Image 1 (spheres, rainbow, N blue to C red):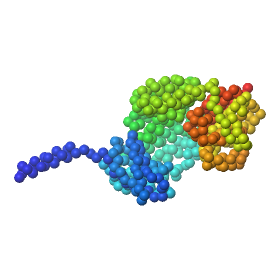
Image 2 (spheres, one colour; image 1 turned 180 degrees about the vertical axis):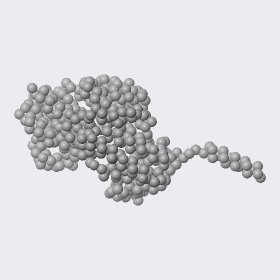
Image 3 (cartoon, rainbow, N blue to C red; image 1 turned 135 degrees about the vertical axis):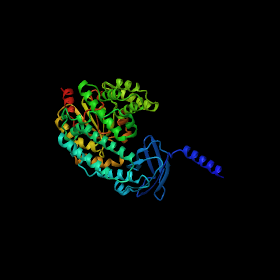
Image 4 (tube, rainbow, N blue to C red; image 1 turned 180 degrees about the horizontal axis):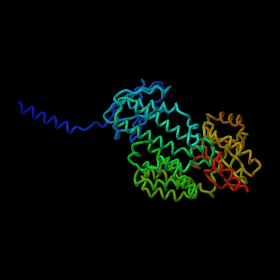
Length: 455
């Protein structure tokens, strides 16, 4: 009998030694007052869509590969989520007050309730436009105090894992450095001081930071965002110094600072989806990207974009338009032949577009006696047609006010490959492209450009 007990004990120990650790997370939730029929969870190369029942409930087993940060999205709202294998998490949300009502239960409740609170804490600080409008010294004081507030909040949370504590301290560090990296460009934007430059010592506090940590890149969205900001800043220095396009400078910086591999290819392809331009360096940009051995899906997407942009380089005949004029009838690009044409593609719902309106009105006033046509093309949907007509009238918008015939799918918009607005285009007196992505009215560059063309 003793031998049998001993044998069973040995078998039991053997079985315990070979039992695999759980690779899944159990999740369940309740959503109130939402029209969404599913919940999407994504991050760390993982994606899952979970159906919401008629009662507002969802649940699933998530076979995640990596512990770490994820995003939970319901409709247009989202919230951060921290997941580790072998644990459980429950969530309740009222969609009418999404951020204020997110509440977690389960073994991962402490970590996730902290993240929900952290998001609310971010909304109590100084508004972003005010913070980035501060002078250099005041800005550094403000973000240092902000970082200390976040760290104090983190250290006050009870029952969180050591692994999460270490990761979250890194997340706060990445966010803090990203604020420093963004300061110069954001200060220019919010103060309209395009000549602003930080002091020579401004970046000394982060000069020893590792901007080539691919392990952090693959595990942290905050680090990934930081790298993109850092490389953008470095590329702008090269652009100004060497006269290269932003896209070429950015790819050269990434190529120099990131080891060969998926991370380099991802950084480049993510940038090029929106940052590749129809300029003098287009060919060189595309060829440099191809040297990163891109995956077939990304290469196909970037190649399609490249082929479109080749037709939009300076000197090519511009795609044309014939659209309804706010004053009546229709106006086409051919009607404006013999004039320099400055096109603004915009929409009434677009905040950045509306911020350009005062500058565009002033530009129109200052050049009204010159051989130039200021054309604004709205891509508002049909349901917003009356909103467009009312805004043009009430804001006394000048120039030639047109509305496209099929919003984003309008031929002029797709022919120019427009993916974001506002977008400005310069066309010469013969209908040829001067610049398919021209400076904005708020930029000091546009007047220099127009003056040189109208001499």
